[in-house]
Length: 459
Picture 1 (cartoon, rainbow, N blue to C red):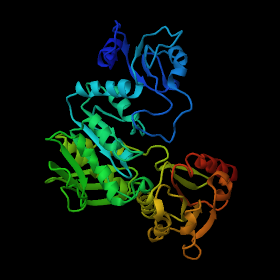
Picture 2: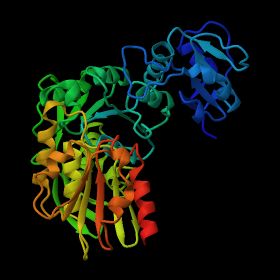
Picture 3: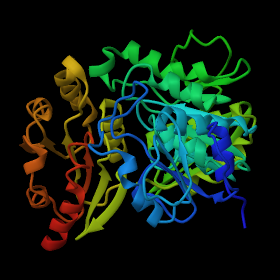
Picture 4: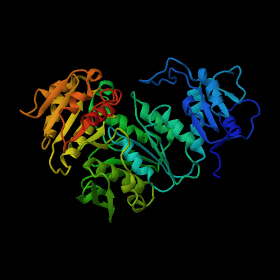
């Protein structure tokens, strides 16, 4: 039986709590009462983020309102801003359950781990790259997309002290957030997967985005390593840099498709390493190179990771394939920006076809600021080899209006009123269709499950 990640007494000491607490084991730390299981520590966060953070999903209710549910589900202790009446398990009281509770415990977790820590960020593909890194033997990595002001500290609090490697994904909702998350994480290696026009409404320019992503280096120690794509400048960091991509220290030598898999040969320093990716795609190769470069920078063995890469599949909403009635649907609906939409189209173009058409269902790319119309129109240059495009949302009208004759399959203005059957009726056996757009376009509206149901009814 593995040792617990904490005891209640250890948590109380880490937070400077008064009183006496037992050495009751804790196996899981969560801020969500619905996820509490026996042996959990429940962190009762405010529904309105503190510490200057913002959230697109702020709750109208506070976490401590669910203290009784957490206790009933098996929590052995909870972190609260004040004593909660009727609760029988230990309550560790702090002034602010986010900053003085969750973040303070995360700092204590990081302080006791002496192995390599890879922190990563990027405009697109960071979660997929994190999944590649997580394949390293005995690594611990951020679950799902735990990359914000509560997800990062939760990752640190739950990370196994005996892991070979910690992998911590970092995202942002506002300027300065990545620097704060990196300073909390204190990575030994900081990886920037890419810099693309994402969050332009908040940051204003591609240069501002670059500065925000590169600010992950602010958490590095003096002897740390910054891992960057070839050609990305980062003059702010004066320490060691490892690069990946064309003509870089870590780069692709060749690849050969074999069905849905790609056999890839990469140069890692002065050593060639061969590996497989399933499915294969240009952006997956780039993400794999980023992961291998970070492993090298962490003084671990890239070959040990390379043999595991073929086992890393696709996460839900990030390219999962489903088929019904001879039609293949690629669900890439979790999010969308100019870089990731171009990558999805490139992957569709590279797909081996035996009859049928390559179809793209594209939804608006949000948070692009004043240049949003141009970014949507600009997708037209990525459509070589695509047989048909169905556009959804007011911004995608700009693309629809410049599509070549015969390529436009239709346009619908509001994703909330789009009936999946409208798209299903356009498809036929042999077609491969990718669904891509910002999260609010298809993912939130559960469009792909509706499309699969419509195709099943049609079959």
